[in-house]
Each structure stands twice: as C-alpha cells, then as structure tokens.
Length: 282
Length: 270
Image 1 (cartoon, rainbow over the protein chains, first blue to last red):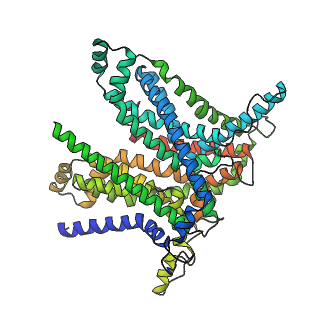
Image 2 (cartoon, helix red, strand yellow; image 1 turned 180 degrees about the vertical axis):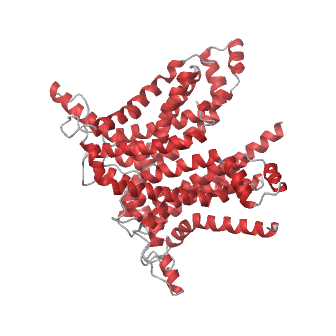
Image 3 (cartoon, one colour; image 1 turned 45 degrees about the vertical axis):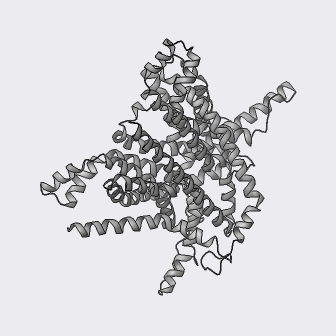
C-alpha cells in the first residue's frame, strides 16, 4: 500500500476511535448548558443547572463525605502500606511471593465480590456483637457499624495493595549503601530512616497516596455494599441517574471532567519541568 | 537493609481480617442454609439461573473481542508515534477512564434513548427511530465504551517493546501487512493481549450497573443477580454467596488462561 494512504488511514482510524471515546462526554458538556430538561434538543443557553447543582445539598454533602473518606483512608493506607513494604523487603523470597499473591486478591477479584464479602463480614460482626452484648447484659461492642467505620475499612482494604505495589519497587531500586553510610556516619537507625530512606521513597509514597485518593473518590461498587445509609459522591450520582432526567448530572460531569483535565495537565507540566531540571543537572 | 519484618505485621493482620476472612465467610454462607446447616442447595439452585450466567459470559466475551479488535490497531499506531506525541495520546486514552463510570454510562443513556440524540440525527436523514436502549446490544456497547482504555493501554505498552527493525525486516523479507500482523505483531504482543483480556473481561462479566442502566429489566447479568440477593428484593445471602463463589471461579478460570502468557514481571513485583 502507498505510504501516504496508509498514514491517512491510520489518522482516520485514530480520529474515529477518539471521537467514540469523547463524543458522549462532549454531548453531556453541551447539554449541561441546555435551557430545557431535554436531553436531545438544544433550546437555549443557561447556567441554571450549575446553579442548582451548587445549591443541591445532597450532592454537596456527598462530595464532602467522599473527600473526607478519601483523605483519611489514603493517609492510613499509605502509612500502613509503606511500613509493610519496608517489612516485606527484608523477608525471604518465599514469604514475599506469598504476600504478593495475597495483595493481588483484592486487585484481581471483581469489585462486586470484594463489596459483598465485606458486607457479609460486617453483618456477621453485627450479629456477633448483638449476641455478645446480650450475653454480657451491657452494650460493650458497638452494634450499628454500617456507615463511617465500614466505609473506611472497605476503602483502606482496597487501597492498601496499591501502596505496596508502588513503594516496593522503589525500595528495591534504592541503594542500600546510602542507609549503611548514614549509619557509619553516626546516624541512629531511626535518624537514618527519616533522613535518608524516607526522602528517597517520597516520590513513590506520594504517588501511592494520590492513587489511593483517586480510587477512593471514584469507587462506587464496594462503597455501595458497605455504606449503610451514607452517600458518597458516586452513590449520590447513582441515585440521580435512577431518576432518569436530571440535567444537573451533565453539569457535574462537565465540572469533573474539567477538574481531571486540569489535574492531568498540571502534573504533566510539573513532570516535564522536573525532567528538564534533571537533564540540566547531568 | 532495614531488618524490620515486624513492620509488615499490621498490613498482614489487616489483609487477613478484611480480605481473606470475608472471602471465607462468602464460602461459609454459600454452603449453608438460613439456619446455618450445611447444604449444597444454594449451588444447585444456581442452575435455574443458567441463562443469566450464559448471557453474562457471552456479552462479556463479545465486548472483550470487540475491545481487542478496536484496540489492537490503536496500540500499534500509538507505539509508532514520536515519543512526545505518544505521551499526549496516552493521556487522551486515559482521560475518559478517570471520569466516574456512572457518568460515562449515563451519557450513553441519553444518547441511545428512544428520542435521544442518535435517533434525532438519524431522523434528519429519514432513518429510524431505532430501539437501541434496553437491548443487549446497548449493554455490550456500554461495556466496550467503559473498558476500551483498559485494553488499549496494555497493548500499547507491549507494542512499544517491539523494535521497528523487526517489522522492517519482515517487510524486506516480503511479508505483507496481514503477515506482519499475524506473524510478528500478535505473537510479540501476547502479554499485552492477555492483560487486556483480563482487564476487560473481569469487570464486564461482573458488572451490574451497565446492564441496569443500558439493558433495562430484560438483560439481567450475574452482577445484577448477586446485587438483588444482598440489597435488592430477593434478599438471600446464602444464594448470593453461592453466586459470588461461582463468579469467582469463572474469573479464576479466565485468569488461569491469560496469566500463563502475562506472567513475566509479576514475580518481581513485591
């Protein structure tokens, strides 16, 4: 085939595929400015849906809950996961392999099964707590745990493995001699850890933290089974889609898309600046 | 370096308590009745739902194949671009993935409905209206749309490792485009294909949102059945657990087919 035609064909294919990926998002963005509730006829420009979105307390509460849950669970997962990565790195090959397989379970398992299994665990705990409390004649164990505790446990559980898989490779790349040199130069192991090892791991820890935040905010399925009556943002979105027509969703999607776009552009920009800096150094 | 194995302790306790124990509880519920006595009834009852299981498997398989066919050229084209362009394109593939999948699926609801945009546009040229939403086709479309990036990215990664001189050598030796694809590109991107298949098939076969939003009531999938047992009207933890168990086996079977090829690099991860 002629090279020129081949190029054109390639380009046409990529354009088609990317329009498939972006058309639905574009349509939502356009209709977020639509005056009428129609999802197919554009009748006139308005910002009303954005206004009503920002006065919709259900959405705002859900957003706040999602953010708080994300930050708490990301902090806990990052700390626990980093500790674990360091502990695992000093184990022998066999135990490492076993733990690696254990960490793969929540990543590989369908989310619905992780959600359902956690729900069953919490239900089982509740009936155990009820039984124990009646045996002892006083309410020692908390019984109604669905809500904050269950959501946090669930989110930490599915975030933890990602921290391990982010920090462990960095730990392996690290030069052991740095740590030993710090000890030789009179650092206590604690100082050596905080002044040498931790700064070295920081980029990996930070990216693990960000991954946890995004997964936590984005998660619907596992939260759906473990949230009780609380509503995280995805769950609020789900209840809105059940009502069929609510143009506020379009406005919300547009805002979220722009936020994601901004985050990606900023991180990209920072990466490339870092890259240029590194190039100049060498 | 740091001889502190005990640091992994809290993590291990956590994983056993909240990942392993819950799965064992699923197994326990699956093999008992409401009173807690051992029974296999739950597993045999599933036979009644074999059409739902078959539908899930078939729709997920169709979606996976479509994703593979659509993504393969994309992975190849992207891997042959200049490095700076590759980076931008990769971002473009990932961007929709970052949108919440409920919103993405909702977007298709408004495109596909009876007086939705697609039918309006087709109406302008005198076609339709077509029944698109609440069909199994719409469910497959939703799966393809949601999971296509998960197929593109591993394929692209695998293909960036193919040295262009190998393709040129094949051309020099007289291979046509078809031969290059079947004899060079496909064999050399097998790890990417395997990863992509798992990453599309597993969420597709276990979804309950896509089928509910785009499939109407007539396209129940395994995920919907399980959800109904736990939070819906059917409300039967034991049956739901048995279904989850079967779903897990299906996923494990699928994985055992694909990880044979994708195993490289997995071992060194931790």
